[in-house]
Image 1 (cartoon, rainbow, N blue to C red):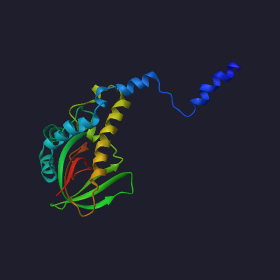
Image 2 (cartoon, rainbow, N blue to C red):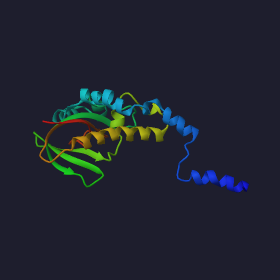
Image 3 (cartoon, rainbow, N blue to C red):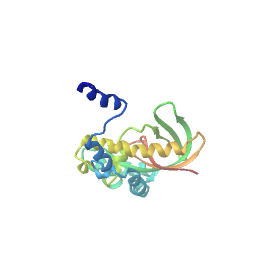
Image 4 (tube, rainbow, N blue to C red):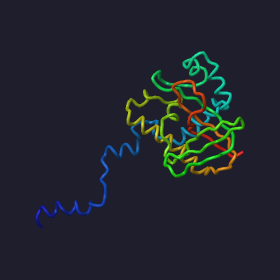
Length: 203
């Protein structure tokens, strides 16, 4: 047989397959950063308990923020940021009734009306934008990655945990819920900005 035909045969056989490089195989067995290895466990055992511990009721948090002398003091006392150039992240608890639900957008949201009459917007997914969850977690920072792309992947993987939680919860208009989550801000807010949830339950 012509040598060229011998060379073509493996190409024909493998035409429907994707050859994984040795590096990709190594990355699958051992992620390029150990913090990428157990996202679900990190979420369940560390990030969620941290936010639950730090969360303050929405109305009380707003009042405390507005009582601080300036935003830097408010962040030090009531929030968290790993680097000065980042927005401050605050942990909050929200109780109330689901009054609106947007399921037509991939960046789904629901509105929760609290007993105080305030409306709080909560991200529901399936796509949750932003990095508030990643930046809220005190167990990791950019210095642990030194790779902007990988750090971005880490944030998206954490957001996916929140999206999966909300998909399993299936909120409905009229539900009374108790939830905890985080939001980011560059200044003292006059109302609670969009909240990314870490825990939710029906009341």
